Image (cartoon, rainbow, N blue to C red):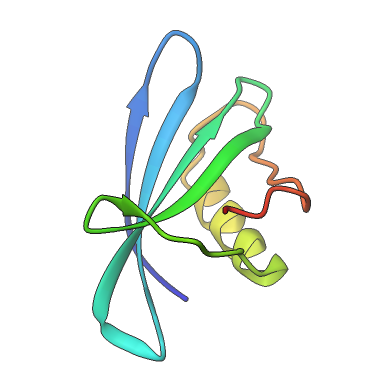
Length: 90
């Protein structure tokens, strides 16, 4: 998975972040990861979208770690983002 960009959509309730990605085996197809995080950094929802539609996709552990590391480098919140292992993305 290659991360291209991110956009932040803050609200009073949570932080919504969209992350543009593509996969090595589909270099011409661009996807968006839509995730929601609480103020403490806990990601409560994470899903993969293609053309705005949800995909049935279970994120691999290393993909979750890569997204969290990328977003933590951006310092979006006071606390680091944490994506629970049980959050599959489906």
